[in-house]
Image (cartoon, rainbow, N blue to C red; front, side):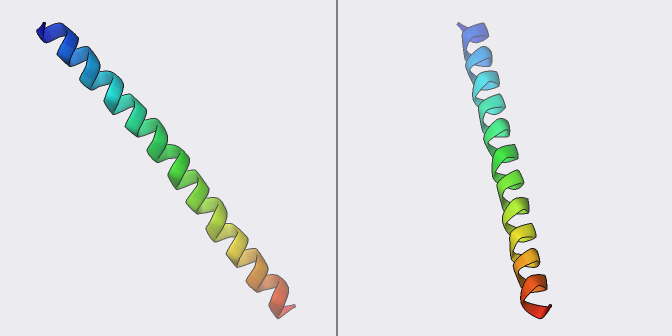
Length: 43
């Protein structure tokens, strides 16, 4: 029983970590896009 709980917690933690990585990557791409748009507007 305890082993199943630890496995479930581990799977949940890995899933949340993978989701967070995708979110941070998307945020970085959005910031880069805003910077590029601003640079294009200045030029």
